[in-house]
Image 1 (tube, rainbow, N blue to C red):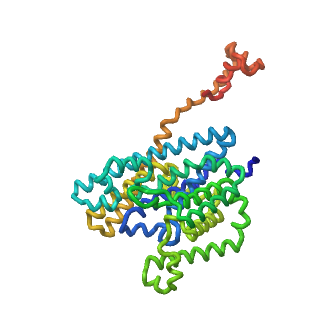
Image 2 (image 1 turned 45 degrees about the horizontal axis):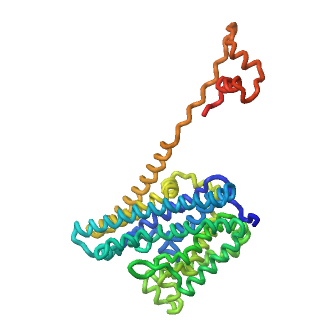
Length: 421
């Protein structure tokens, strides 16, 4: 089949790093209960939140990175590189999983607080530790706040054939993704969880955001540019954003919710996150349209120093995400053990984000140290003073047109001032 996708342009898109950093910071803050600071995150002002952003950018980035590789080097190479990334994600999840449950168990035992075990959904480890750990390795058992990475692993693991098809029929794949989404919602499809229930993030539904990100990366936004830039679309986006804000606030404040008819209030509250409610996906799509319209890839503001911490956290997303999940537990426990005052909430929030940022900067610095240092180019020989005869070798180089690839040519490169590798 003929390639129909439009490959992304060369160069790193700092918008992805910036918003992925925003998602990591917001996920950390949202995972801390009874924290006034998390009122700055987007979940309080619309239907979608940082999880939607994380999944969308994951799909966009996967296409951005592996599409060209799959075209130039074949499906096998591209698929195996994607599989390698899935393995890295799985290892990161298992390491975080072990550290997380050990930390929760230690805190519960050290401070004689068994309620923490139930609060973080690790009570099964007490009754049947071997089976619970086995189910954890199968991604069925997930403590609280460890739901995003298993979803990411499953979506990435199934992505190679999807990417192959999307390169050839992007619109058909997007339509198929919508079909699967609505079928899953209609028939109640989901993956089983352990010890009971289903996945908190239904992968049959959340795949829509992942595929939507891939579709945007492979030319979807380019083909839709006229619609995105239209005045009618702008007014629709503004109106829907205001509607989402009002409905979300109605769910936060009962007095406001009582002002609306029951049928209208119940249609949007509680927000169906597990199955990615249609109004939730539409809200995120509206945000994507506004960003594409008003924040171009070449926007100079992306180089402002104020955004550098967020961009660094986005570039080291996996490590920062894992650190943030663990720190959110530490912050939650600190608030439980302390007064939980406004000052304490601000301190744990700022401290956690600072530590996540330090991790991002350290990893960035460490990767630079792993790269081999290229030797400096030798300086060109100084001009010979008048009256002094140059060495015979120099005369030969200056006066002979030596064939490229010959020994004499190889010797003449350094004397001409070219860099060596």
